Every structure is written in structure tokens, then in C-alpha cells.
Image (cartoon, rainbow, N blue to C red):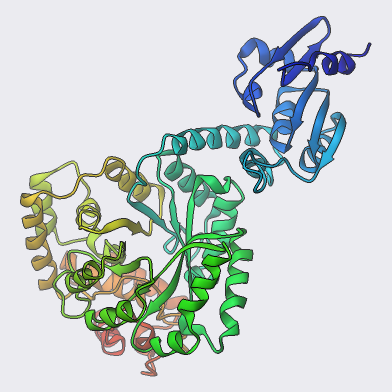
Length: 515
């Protein structure tokens, strides 16, 4: 009797895996890939050069066997992904039934481990990914409320100043850390990162984790619609770009008085209802940048909207432009759950004047400046998610540290926030959130948000003469339009959610850095 025949014979009764290596043999009884991931050092040594028989061998189990050094394998059921892995690594294989993929226990699609290993060829990397998935599935099985920090996929780390040149390797590490700490909500959109954010989501999240491990939101760009048929075409393309069959949350993107006619004309809310009825989305709502009166109108005319996404932060709380407080009040009046965007106002509230930062440090010297902004938003009644566009691992480490066991601001801390808001307003800083909507149609290729950020840093640091910001400005201007190159076409202002007078503000930037 050959070794593989002996392994097949041992695979009886409740046994799920049998390993034969010379005179040594072992039988396991755990389900799935658990026998392979739970092996001690002695069991791992047994795998090297062994013959293994398993009830079900998917791609994940195959790669684990290959990592352990198995020379041949038999599966009563074996997936095409497992066969491809065995062939690629020169492992002999036999099977009773061949299947496209190993189905999950609910019978609704591929099992989590099959999804995890689907795009991995390196056995060592597969083992790492499988263990990450096991950890996440245990976290999800424990239940509990979803943590309030969402990963906004709109300010991802870059390899150059090209917004489409995303540092995917760094994003992979950020996604791994974010999920491992118990967070699960990702937010992307059609136009983020020059239309590549959804692709980054596919590469860094969807291809690397089972669908059960995260919640994903994207948005329908109502401002780009030319006919009703566009909505289905865009949605289908978004599913393709993200690599998913459904979205947990689907938003009508940036409803405002200028685009609301298109929403009504093409019946975008009815389209969202249709997607939900078809099981293509789980919930639908909209993001909003306009007046409280307009928000009241939209929610009155569309009470079926399940949630609303609003720009809320302590600097805009009492501002005449954004009116965060009044928008929040309207959403609460309509009893709509709230997702917060721009809690740190595009980084503005991470780089505040020294006097303002001193107020925070006097109360809690160990906390970051950004933490105050995010905790302010997360502590508001009705808020179930706060999005943070994290650009590097340091920001992610910081945000997850204080949101893992979230505590809202107390009365003393709220008073400090009011004082800080007053100090920041006194600097005259430009209220730009770096959403970059303004740059897409700029005929002069002016990096408007970058120039505004440099201008604000100059004000906050209150320096005169040649500065680091001057250096950065000239670096940008060497490959992009200067602030003074603005031809006053107004295309930027029509797309600005903050309703900034960008043309006149660019004149200030030019005066600061070009004279």
C-alpha cells in the first residue's frame, strides 16, 4: 500500500485530515484549515515530505500543505484553485470530486479561506494571510458594536505627487493593522484619487480578505450623470473596480442645490431602492454639502434614505459657511443616523497654532491634536461612524489608539475645543479640506489644495521670509501651474463643497509665495 493510499484509508469516521510520512502517521479531527494552522512543531515536521489526505482541499489548504513540505495530496473534494497551486509548486495531487471553489457553510459563495488565498501564490504569504483571516473571523464572531472609526480611502499614501500613484504596499500594511485592531468600515468613491481609489480597495482589501471581514461603502457621482442609464453603468463598473458583488452602504454623492435637479430627474433614490431590493447594496443614503434648509428638503422628500453623511468638525460647528451644528440638528430632527466626514477638516485640525495646541496639551499631554477633532465628532448624538482619511501608518496608529475604546469629550474638554476653534479662526487660514474636487477640471493644472495647505502652514507658523513652505511651493510650481496662472474660469469653485472663493484665494497664495 502506498503512502497516499494509507492516508486515504486513515481518512474515515470523523477524521478530516490524515498525514503519513514513512512509519509515522497522524489523524486530525478539526474542521477547515484549522488542523494545518494549529499544528505544533512536531506536527509541522511530520508534514515535510509527507502524503496527506483531506476531506476538502481548497486553495488555502493546498498552500498550507505546500508551505509544510507535503509531497503529494488527496482531496475527496478539491478546488480548481488548489489544483493550480499544487501544479505550480510541483506537488502530486489526486481527488474524488473537482469543484470551481470550496463553498461557505451558508452555501452563498466561496468560503472565507478560499477567498483569502485566491490571489496568493507564495505559500509563506498565504499562511500569514490565512492566520490574519482566522483572527478577524474570531473578532467578528464575538459580536459587539461596530467601532466608530472608518477608513476613508481618499488621502492614501502616494509614491509621487500623482494622485493615482498610490503606495499599495503601505496601504496593505495600514489595512492589515486597521482590521486587526477590530475596525471594519471602508469608504471610497468613484472619483477619489483620480478614479483609482476603488481599484486600490480591490487590491489592498477585497483580494486579500473574505467579504465577511469588512464593510464597504462607495458613492454614485450624481454630478456626473447625463441620463438615467448612467447610474446602472457606473454601479456595474464600481462593482468591477472594487471586485465585489455588493456594497454595504451606497451613497448618492455630494447632494447639493446644484445637483439635486439631476437626482430628481433621474430618480436616483428609486435606483438605490432597486439595488437594495436586488441585494446589490444593503443600505443607502447620501453625502451632503449645502445648507440646513436644503438638507431638510431632501430628507423630507426622501424619508426612505437610511442615513446621511455630513461634514462635521469643531471648526465648522458654528461657521456660517458649512454650518455643521445646524446640519446635525436637521439630521437628528429626521432621526437619521449620521456618518461624519472631514472631522479633521482635511488635516487643518491636525496642524493648529502653537497657542491652540498648548491648550490641548495642558489637559492631556499624551494625546495628539487630531484626537480631539475625531473624538468631538464621534461623541455627537446620532453619529455611528467617523471617517478619517489616513495618509500613513503613523496617522492610523494614532487614530486607532484612541478610537479602539472610544470615550467622548467631557465638559472641560469641550470648553477647550471652543477656545481652540476661536484661535484658529483668528489666523485667517483657508477652510480647505483637500478633497481635490477642484483640481479635476482645472485647465492650468494648479494643485489648489496643496497651495492652500502651504499657505495655512505659513499663517499658523507665522514666519516671514524664506521658509520650508516656500521651498515646497516652488517644487510644486516646477511641474504644475503656479497660483498666478489661474485664468479665473471658475471651474474649481463650481465643484468646491466648502463654497470657497478659490480664485481670489489663489491671488493671496501668489502674493505670499511668488513675490
